[in-house]
Length: 360
Image 1 (cartoon, rainbow, N blue to C red):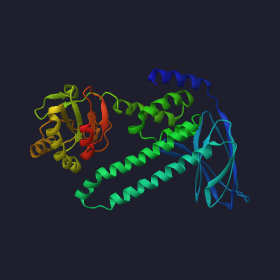
Image 2 (image 1 turned 180 degrees about the vertical axis):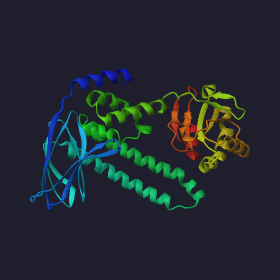
Image 3 (image 1 turned 45 degrees about the vertical axis):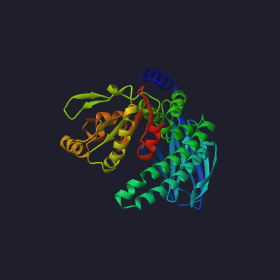
Image 4 (image 1 turned 180 degrees about the horizontal axis):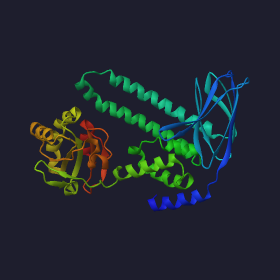
């Protein structure tokens, strides 16, 4: 969806949108006398709206006005209930004070669908926590580095499972606001093509929502560096201070390698890169190393120490450097493998995984 198309859609919906009341009521068994909070959930932000003491029967009632679907939550000491509210909704909840997540809702199925999504994410997060605990238990840096390939594959399997489960929900409930929220939880590194399709659908369905705006911005940012896309141009100075362009390598298989002199995992991977470079350079393999060192002297010292026989440039500025921003690099080492036409065919390969891909 282009900026021009989005502008037209937003202007149309702003002209059509009208404020409408909504009512949220309910009964909390065992909650008499406690305070219940009603919050609006924004992207990365919670905005408290109302608070109310439950009456002697544990009942509550909130009234508000909105012009588009919004995300809210009911908040109690024992937990929260996330709620999607549409203009004109009249919802009634019943649940026990000790377990708000086990609720019933009259007036809409979307809070139930939203609960299903959060249960799915909770199961995935439990698996991620298990891997992180195992990783944190390894204190030796060399052992930790040796585990990285295994850990990366484990994270990739969990990410694939998360994507499958979220896509099932999105495809099943594609007209629901919940589907938009689920789409925002997808990893754009591995799902950008699917997210672009979803973006086109939600552009007309929820154009005024800040959740759609955040999703759209993510799609627009990741699409240029997605697998299958032509790698964006890079230009930075080499060790002699002369500018070098990534496009000068066109016609070769190129590994764009983001690193820094202070990055220990980056430097531990260099011997493997040397081995692969010697093995495949006759077949048209090239490495284009992009240092994000702020300290140019430290970068030059590392080059002398490591003696890497391939293209080296420095785009100082750390993760705020132009190259890192263009390629959305948030941690290093980060790599992008390009084919002879300059298209990205794989990301973040190293060790045995990189060797297998080069052999292909």
